[in-house]
Amino acid sequence: MEWLNGMGAGITIFIGCLGLFFPDKASAMTGLVAMTPAARAEFRGTLGVTFVFLGAIPLISESPYAVFTAGVCWLGAAVGRIISIFPDYANDKRNWSAVAFECVVASLMLSGEPVSLVV
Image 1 (cartoon, rainbow, N blue to C red):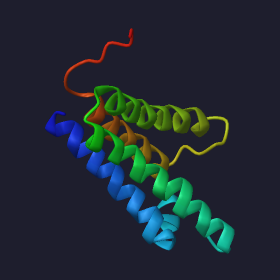
Image 2: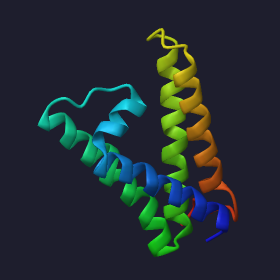
Image 3: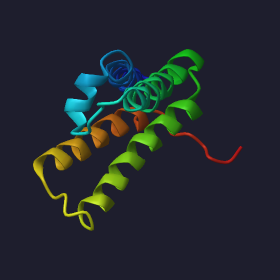
Image 4: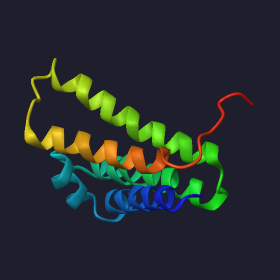
């Protein structure tokens, strides 16, 4: 695994740990509200452990396919956010900053040796 891939995986794990261990801070960062136990569970599960695993599996397995998958997931988040910005009238600094962050992490994960998609 390339060191840039490792940095992307580490950032992914860090973001996941925020959601898992500090749902209130993750709530403030995202602009979402985690006021109920069910909402905190959503932060810990979906924005927490999912991202911990998304970063940890490439590090543990050292599989270029796992790294590629994580990178594509980050890229997909950026694309989904861009699509959302226009119909949802969400053209603001917070959303564009998130797009930039997601693209940076995707770039880290997708850098390095290309993966053949044909098995």
